[in-house]
Structures are given as C-alpha cells and as structure tokens.
Length: 212
Image 1 (cartoon, rainbow, N blue to C red):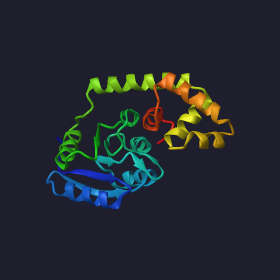
Image 2: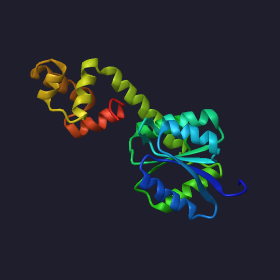
Image 3: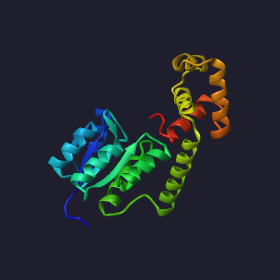
Image 4: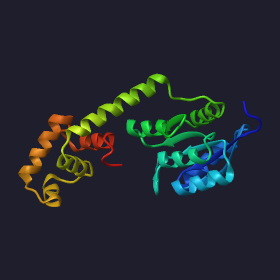
C-alpha cells in the first residue's frame, strides 16, 4: 500500500458533479482531489502537471471520450490508475475502458460508498474487472464486429438515422431514396440484427458504435 493519501484527478465536464465528487473524496482520510479537468485535452495536461495517483474519468466529454483521455494519460503516466465513473451503460464503452487500461467501470447510479471503495481497491493495485467479465466483453466485441460486417453501407446509414429518431420518410429524404427502399432496408436490418423498433435501433447502433 502506498504511503500518504491517494491523489485523485477528477475528469468530469459537469461542474456540479465534479464538486460533489471532490467533496465525497476529500471527506476520506486516505484520498484527496488534487485537481479537475473538463475535457480530454485538459485531462492530459493536468495529469502531466499534477501527477495524480488515480484519475476518475467520465466517459462522455466535450471533445471526445473517456477512453481517449485514458489513452493520452497512460502515454505520459503509465503508472497512473484509471477508473471510469459514468452514466454510459454499454458493453462498447466497457470494452473501450478495458482497452484503455482502466481498472474499474462504475455507473453513476451506484452508491457513494461504492465509488470510495473502488478508489481504495484500485489505488491498492486491484481491479473490478474479473477475467470472466473481460472475456465476455471481448466475445461481445467480436459478435458486434461480425454483425457490422454483414451490413451494407446503406443499411448502416439507415440504422444510424433510425437510432437518431429519424422517421422512415425523413430517412428517405435525407438519403435521396424512396420510402419503399427505406422499408426494404429496415426489413433487412430486422433480419440481420433483430431490430424492429427505434428503441432497439438505438441500442444496437450504440453497440455497433454507429452513434454515441
């Protein structure tokens, strides 16, 4: 176990959330917040300046993802431990976090004590990703890639627009194709991916990283 309190950098683009996390962490005797960053670019600069032991990162940032931030931080400080704390709830995001070198991925709906416990575990060299979880994420990633390869370029466009809430008639107008052709693409997507509603389209498009 390291000597002294764990030095934490909070990467969060919502100021109120960042302040709440700082208050929670600074209330613990064995950890303290040494700084805050609100973007990918700032997180890398602040990590170089402040040399944190651990970085607590949101996945959705103004200029990229937490995975982008994590990759940049790891390049300059490979010893820094990383935890994602986010409202993102997709396997694609979890896989990106693992690939970026994170040791934990926590949903913001979790209790404050869970966040504190995770910081302690990770600061001590532990991880909240089990081998089984990592294997499952890798398997899901491979399945998503295989599904994506089965889609035509036009089907990907239609799925992306469906996921954005665009109606079939508006999709036809946006892509310059007939309404009947759009319906044909949607039926094909349903057959290939099991997508039959806008809600399912949103979920699937996010799994395939066609939309954020």
